[in-house]
Image 1 (cartoon, helix red, strand yellow):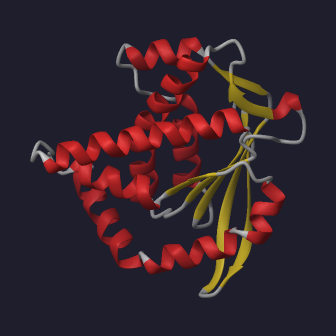
Image 2 (cartoon, one colour; image 1 turned 45 degrees about the vertical axis):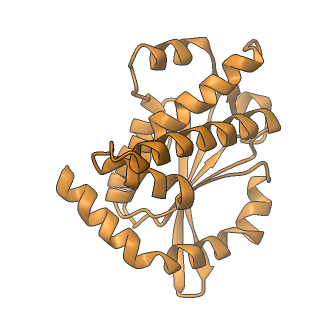
Length: 206
């Protein structure tokens, strides 16, 4: 199934507790994220049409989705996702931070639909490092607010998501599926009670 710039497909993977289903999201064109996205997030526009499309697909997919796999490389440069090469290093870091902050809302929406894992594969070192630094910065900010008693409760949820829910990797998609994906479900199973509770709270909150 295809979206405007994304292709969606699914497959079953064997896990210790039974078969699980992965929804694979692959670029159908060359997607480069740059200053337009950075300026939009700085001005308070936190929406992403890509995130919205993925949520719609998860919600309407004819089979239950256990994990979303975001591919950054679809086999050629013409089917790939990454940051605009014209961005300066400081802009790359800021974009990584802003995107991770934006995606916390996306992650919450996915969990509310009962999908308890997300992984992005095939990242270049540039994107991976920026996302990692953005995650660490966000975690420090969330922890500071929680420690200071300035959280409304969402910060605790978001910090847990950053610690446990999303996985960013430079490993190729095929390698990740064979070597890592089955063990990812073991991690999900260890947090099953927490995830069920988190889903219930997110659904109740609307």
